[in-house]
Amino acid sequence: QGYQIIATTPHKDSSLLQDFDIHKKTAFVFGAEAEGVSDYVKENADGFLKIPMVGFTESLNISVAVAIILQDLTTKLRNADVHWQLSAEEKENLYFNWVKKTIKNVNQIVARYHRNRL
Image (cartoon, rainbow, N blue to C red; front, side, top):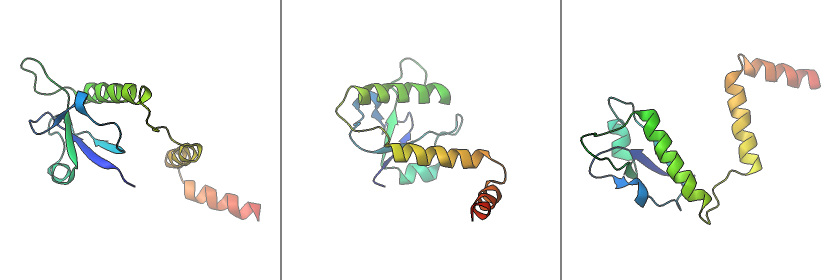
């Protein structure tokens, strides 16, 4: 669907968060706290992103890293002339898929609904 895959990693080949180009459709991959992103992701990602660090800290807790990156990028997107929000149809599809995943036996319920409508 035209997304670039960006792996988050604190290593030296990563671009800095403040330099990230918000004009490309992007999917971010965040790794596990101890291991980081998998070797598969490292080999297949289109690029790498890191949060600048100060002092002796090499990386941040995963929830902190995600929060910092998403806050920075959404602020940039809101202040830019970039069409980034989902359409009404995209929102509806995402919501429907989420609801389906939260309901036990959803396929049987949907099938029964369609049988009863006929």
